[in-house]
Image (cartoon, rainbow, N blue to C red):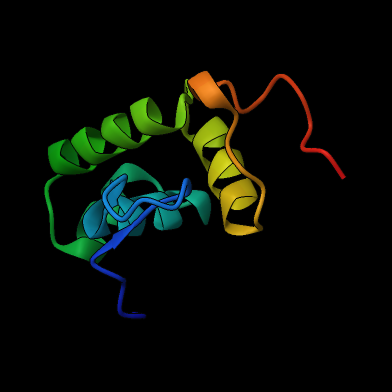
Amino acid sequence: MNPMPREHSANGSTNRFSSREIQVLELASQGMTNPEIARRLELSVHAIKFHLASVYRKLGAANRTEAAVAWALTMNGHAAAPGGDNFSTPPAA
């Protein structure tokens, strides 16, 4: 497993996501289920649900698919829209 940075942010600050939230989000984005993520990270399924709920809130996402898309866009240099609505308009070219 790749080492993760302690903190990372899509908006440039260093405290938007914890390193654990990033790990959980990246594994969920790869299509892993909550039980699979829990086994991989040696956490409970409840802890995975907690981390995902936090990620959804921070990204303004309703589910793991929206969170994965928002994360992919931020990792490719597209800024998240203010107010958390990352899905209504495509990023400017």
